[in-house]
Structures are given as structure tokens and as C-alpha cells.
Image (cartoon, rainbow, N blue to C red):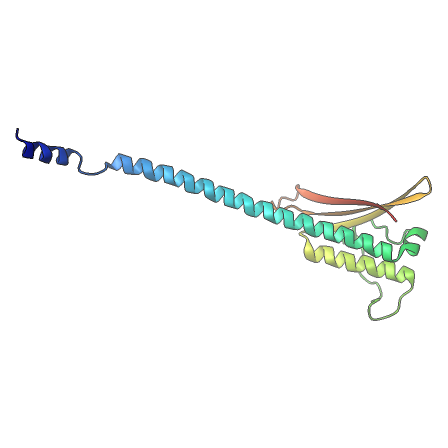
Length: 164
């Protein structure tokens, strides 16, 4: 065999990549893309959960600030207490358009808070409870909502305890 025929013979044998090599490369690439897509989906889910938790924190703090603004009424009576905001009837007098008593302001605050929770969080519910121990009144504000998974069994809660 001369040199020319050896070169032609070698070229015929290594005439490109085989189908199996291409399939293996495509399979490895597909696994990599699936991994990136999975990480992206998890990132989006975590971002949604963080946004919901942040909104629940804002709403819990909002009620604490409403009670702090009406502190004498909050500490004198239990007008801010409510076991479940979804059961609270929104029928309070509009204290932005009309002047209200301090108790009327507390009812207005609860109505506004209920509306904000229901508008901002999926299946959002708020509650406020107070306990007096040793002459100190402690309020517990809880905001719960349906988690980003959408499963009714997966409810998240933000709990704020405060002494006014």
C-alpha cells in the first residue's frame, strides 16, 4: 500500500462523528438544560414565597402601628382583639371621611386591615389577641396565608408580639 491509499483509507474510517456520539452529547446537554430550568423554577418559587412573607410582615406591622396610634383605647379595652379577620364584618364608619370616636377608630382600623389582608395575600387571615401578665399587656398579631404551593394544608404564618 502506498502513502496515498493509506491516507484515503484513514479518511474513510474517520469520516466524522458517529450517531452514538451525537446522541450522548445531546443527552448530556439536555440534562444540563433540565438542571438549569429546575434551578430557575425553584428560584421563582422562593421569590414568590419571600414576597408573600414580606407582605404578611408589612400587614402585621401595620396593625401594630394602628394600635400604637390609638394606644389609650387599645390598652383600656380589647377593641382590637379579633380571632379571625375573615369573620369580621366590615361595617365600620369611615374615619377618613368622618370624625370617629376612639372605639370607632379601632373598628375602622380592623376593617381596613381585613380589607388589606384579603387583597394582598392568598386566603389571608389576621388575628389579634391580648394577654395581661404582671400588669403588662402583650398583643399577639398573627397574619396567615396560603403558601405559594397553593396547597390548603400549607398555610404560612407571621407572628408579631408587642407590648404597647
